[in-house]
Length: 339
Ligand SMILES: NC(=O)c1ccc[n+]([C@@H]2O[C@H](COP(=O)([O-])OP(=O)(O)OC[C@H]3O[C@@H](n4cnc5c(N)ncnc54)[C@H](OP(=O)(O)O)[C@@H]3O)[C@@H](O)[C@H]2O)c1
Image (cartoon, rainbow, N blue to C red):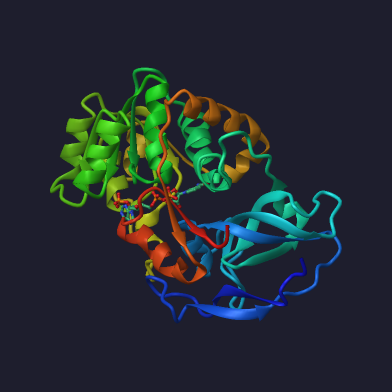
């Protein structure tokens, strides 16, 4: 089948100030260029909607360069290789890698990995439980947080894609798991269905310092931080000596145009001989196969549960993206571009 000559893509037209709008990110029809040597073309079936993409839309220095104005919004994608000028891929293979919010991604083959679907697998699992989002809690909690049986693990955005797995892995490792989330429904879900020991609704709680203290009566040994801001500050006053903070994300500040203050209680790191470590799952790329194998085993044993939210259509992408910042996503958010 010959490829179309144009495709639809979501282009970063200008840098958002606050929540990204349809003037910042615009759907355009653009020519589908030819491949250079070493490149592949992937017909995207799904792409990932992640909070970090908001950071890449800004000019802040980060672990990846800012998305250039006029380029498609960068994202992890999975789909079928439809053309290859690389010996590493042949047409028909399923590949996952760094593409964009677009129907087709053209990239150097090195940005993609082949996917061998196992019986029972769905392609989109490789953007969720068996992708970076599933491996983020795995390596972050175990390699950075280093929880010991009997310790208390506290996690923010606890009903989200990453956070919901952090608490479940903490339980598998014999810890007390406490989650912070933004609604009573989310709090009930993580306690009643995922097995967390306690949950706190930060949106309605009048005194987070006291509530964390009550939910973690023996103090916090590991804090898996997905949000930063006031929740981090309240946690700092509840840390045990030698506590570990896994600094995984700071979603509370991704849409701020001004510099953010704090943390006000940073001194507690010193006072409690605690450590805070910046963590990127991509630093563990060479260990992904072992991580996936372990996650697969726990999923197979029914010890890990995972929610996905798949929304259809490229044109739904930006509204879907903004659900993340309102707490209205239900699990790992993805767009289905084509089946
Ligand atoms: N370091 C890494 O390698 C790495 C890799 C992947 C993800 N991450 C980070 O992990 C975190 C979670 O990502 P995810 O993909 O799993 O998303 P997610 O948790 O499924 O969705 C984001 C959640 O954040 C919460 N939230 C939004 N605004 C907030 C605010 N102002 N204060 C507190 N909570 C807020 C919302 O839940 P509530 O209803 O609870 O507010 C929302 O549902 C993000 O910070 C992301 O950047 C890091």
